[in-house]
Image (cartoon, rainbow, N blue to C red; front, side, top):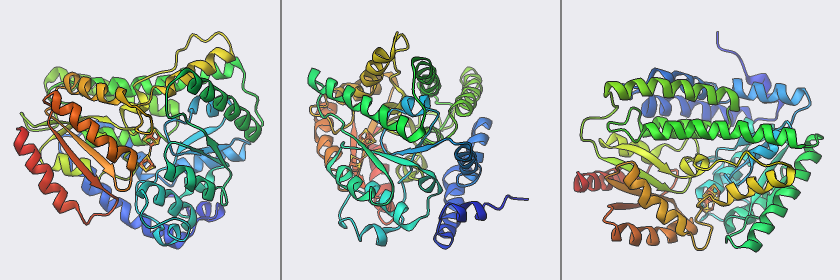
Length: 424
Ligand code: BJ8
């Protein structure tokens, strides 16, 4: 018999009625997007289970952790160093914000025309429908884009928020600012958790989080094969789950899946029809449960072979150097790793252009689809630079701007199909 989690949700302040509505929407959507895929690897069963228990078992684990004195810290950006949170015994949870929720409540404190990701996280908090959010002892914000920066001031009225000042350039003075920010963050995490971080705990944590990144990289490497042994939708799901699952368990399960995929590669077994166009998606993050564009792309007969996204390569392509001899060097190594994230909030952001060109070659991509959330100035403006560079290199590009609604799905499908037809 299924466990009744309602008493647990009620105890953490969830609005049960509003929450029931989400629970009614998620399973059919998941069934349509994920469970109807043909030829899925057996190892995806674990990730299906995680989604099935998205507000159940994992929340129970977080509550047990809290009952034992542990803390839960929520984040919205891949700039927040999980290594530091983990070194203090905390659990780092990437809060989702990939669905239209609590819009009416969010619009009481935010403008109507704002990035859907920002509106979503505010909506989740104000509507009290996310058990992850309600489990958080603190949320970490950042100054990456203006919308987020100002929204975090408001969010702080509802949950303690620590804001990291993320640099927008990569000069020496920016690096020192960032290192100082990480030191302040470490002090705040120690204060919240009541645990002093030392060289041993930080070094262990760096290795554990690196382990997670390395296994995701192993998965990414397998997708360079033609045919790809796994769908892009499944990989996106894994990358989304990486943000909130238990680090050790997740690493083990992705490794097991990769073993299976290696066998598939040896047998020449793929997920798509032979000759299916190979696509890279790039742009704003696709937070769970935002599977809209990948579902359209793969539903149109292509296969996504890489995500140049924060829910993708930007999250795991670089690891933290593990040879730091003391705290100072380790914090320096963490800072270095995170400054390598090619977010459009940087100016200039040439690294992203170079990355896209090299990824297209490495993954033998036939085209790139740039997906921006509506009202996201950094990515929408940068899409023009991406277009220019890819044109020079002869790499076909389709630019899409969308939100979390389904109203434009038909129109997007027509555009994606026309693009695939062109590059076939
Ligand atoms: S490192 S991409 S996760 S900031 S989509 S809220 S930028 S208006 S999410 Fe991001 Fe960190 Fe950068 Fe990655 Fe603003 Fe744009 Fe909205 Fe965005």
